[in-house]
Structure formats: structure tokens, C-alpha cells
Length: 119
Image (cartoon, rainbow, N blue to C red; front, side, top):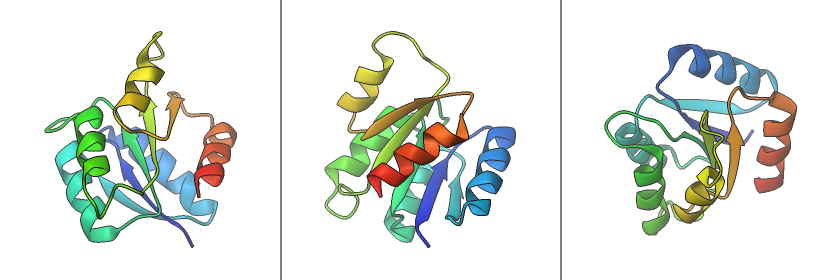
């Protein structure tokens, strides 16, 4: 069962998305800020990371750059999750090292397709 690290500070988003992904057969571990997300990526070694971009402590861009710069975590695929669907946001996420990008509110079938492609 693939392990996904969900880095999300909004409790409602975190709860809803983690429950839906568990029902699809994924093992979910959760971090509530970017700093904890980086630490848990090292300790949990997930198969994929869903990274909210607007996070306390360390934003998703900073956390992703750190993960992609580290030998242990650089090959873990990261999907950016953001409510910011502005022009240039996708490019900014990809520049930070994210492997894909999805907008909130999450459309589960679309996100699952991206997860399956990267796994």
C-alpha cells in the first residue's frame, strides 16, 4: 500500500482528503506545517507527498526546495496543492521542485490520476 505524506494546515481539508485517500487504499501520514512536513518526509520516507503551498512555519515552496535538495528525499514525487490558481502559480510550484500541481477545492478523480501517474 503506497504511503502518502499529506502536508496540510487546514484541519477540514486534512480530514476530508486523508479519509478519502485511505478509502482508496493509501496509507496516509499527516504533517500540519512545512517544517514538520520536511521532518516527516525524512522519517516516514513516503512514496509521494501532497504539499499545501500556504503553510505556517515553512511554506510549501521552501519545504519542497529543501526536500528536493536532500539526497534522501529528492526522488519523492511532490504534488503541490494550492487554492491559488493564478497565472504563474503552476510554474512557481514546478520551479520549486514539485512534480505536479493541483488546485483546491480538490477534485478527487483528477488528483487520483496525478497520484497514480507519479507512483
